[in-house]
Image (cartoon, rainbow, N blue to C red; front, top):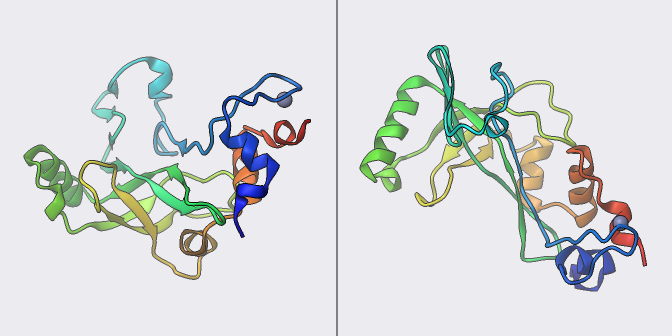
Length: 191
Ligand SMILES: [Zn+2]
């Protein structure tokens, strides 16, 4: 079933039709990224205004993080939206072993990421709207060297893996936004 007929979806995608209650405009699907892996203890990089946030030997950039013995790569986890041709994405961090991290960084430097065969990664952010007690085992893959690597959940039976496969409804997407602190649901219904 297409979302085209849903008036909430129409307002959500039409930046020329502001909400009557508050004037807020929406321009469609936006991703939910994470500034740093959840265990990073040195604060928010974006808030710091620095390209690279450092504390001792720990470093955090927009794409790479070194924390003690741990190595993290910023990734994307795609979820298709049912009834549309659009995809929502989380931007979580993947924890990879140091050898794989160095291989990845080296391949990026040399422009050979298209030959990177992927590696195991733990997803190191708790996604809003999901019950996540433990870090999730994933595959980190680089289908497009011009884009961030993607994460695919290992366990095909995990609810998140099912969503990656089957997609989410618009209502589920709005629930995720609300869980992330951006409850736009009331503003899509005002007339
Ligand atoms: Zn409003």
